[in-house]
Image 1 (cartoon, rainbow, N blue to C red):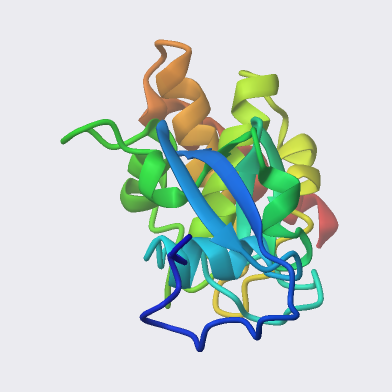
Image 2 (cartoon, rainbow, N blue to C red):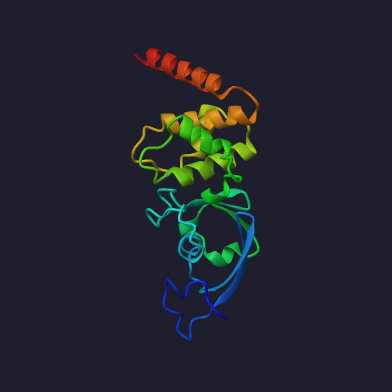
Length: 194
């Protein structure tokens, strides 16, 4: 058996076990022989060259490595690749369909939901999972769904607006109106606090 990682890693010593895994990644079946200790984040980044999955902390604190495992958000820096055997993984590269962006991606673009972009893939996948489960989330539900993902650049306001934008588009509503309504409510709430 040959390893998918021959180019990026020394082969495992003869006494290290290797497992064959078969994972559907972004709709495409991928099979590899890997060490049981290989993290899903490293399998995706080094093995499959899907570098949109970022690794920031390796401790589940930042959420930059978030992917969808069978549709549910997981932090791939603490999931072993062998745990994904026989399952479906979606990375940020799998959100877009051909030349069309996913509404979440459009929302992040149109509402400036990113600055440096490091946290963005994980944020987008957490948002995608939320909208798949709840097509009309409240601001509090959005903030809760994204609470496992840290952004060190923004104040999260534009990220929340991006998710509101995407939710409205998917419901067939005007995303700009939904975001304007959110902005007006946020402004009213700020005025009441003063």
